[in-house]
Image (cartoon, rainbow, N blue to C red; front, side, top):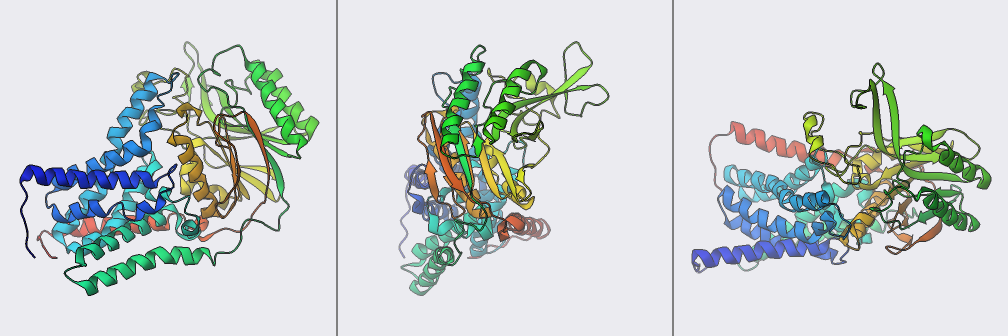
Length: 537
């Protein structure tokens, strides 16, 4: 085979074009675009560059370019960029676009080390596990924002994602990277070794069709023997920036209950309000009248009411938890939470859940426990950047046989956390959120689509209530049975069915990440103790 050497600058431009191509293809495979099949070929140009570049700096430079383009297409919306947006949110969104691509250097660096010390082909076969390891590790750090897990590209590919009830979204990532590698080797060997190319192509086809074949034999989960529950999703479409202004509290409450009445007239027995439905601490003593109004509404209409709400608790110095904040010039302490309240008709108590997975910088400053002074430098104008961390999953109980696991906003993108609600007995899942901060961008569509994966992984109905949309109802097979449009004030009423069976994924959500981490760790240990360099094809 004749090899033509290109001038260095022309070679670099070509390589950069290939990296950009990979980033564009992968970006277009994610919601709201419906080009999900691109995810199965998007990494081929990147793998070509991995194969021909030998230096770590070379590989990582090209990886960063690929990842930056990918992030730019998928995460451009994080800074909000609306006319009312807080400057701090814009700055954070900009920083994320440059910081997030750095995390992609983890799998590329591990690949480089494996390629340098062991066989090239084995390094490529290990790469999918390196990729999953990076995705999972990112999701458990204080800076976590695992929005771009590769498996998240597939919620619209219904016949492919059914296997998620076994392997979860990280398993989908594993499959996607393997298919890209097998297709890359198919192209690489097509002219020189046709038989080997055919073998790689066969492997790619098998990895692709096995999940689809599984989908036709996975059963029908869209209905259940359990008694259906009619739910009403209230979408008030309030401006998230303006509702924090004082003076319109009673108007907001009346709006919620007026929309709820429409849902009740259509048979709803469970009403949902979105995240932080009101800009007040409803259970604080000064809001006892408003709190009573909520109880009266549930009692009068004999409906259950699930709503997002800021929550505050006060303590004296002896009983304050370690993360409590001190009230200035006082020996009293307090904690605040992004919370969910559950009102049961004809009962005085309120079931509560405090959000645990907080948005870095938006709701909690990373490492603020270790460095408290950071809180002074990072705070939104709307005042929600310092919530306390919740205590873990709490299911709301409607009856002995019916429990609802409630996820608040970004918590719905953490698959293993959602599975924990189901393991604790949740028969259905609710997501309450407010995506209106980001306008009519890709963000609200992506966030809604990711709930499809949570429904399939756990085979649970998901009811999703968003302040300005997208509110929707998702079946256990990932079909969206009803949904609203963005930025409309409306009510959505639908029937959902409780489920009690637990999937393999629900029972073992950490299996794929642990296997991937173990393989990555063993490779690192091998490299540490094997000092001898070995170059092999």
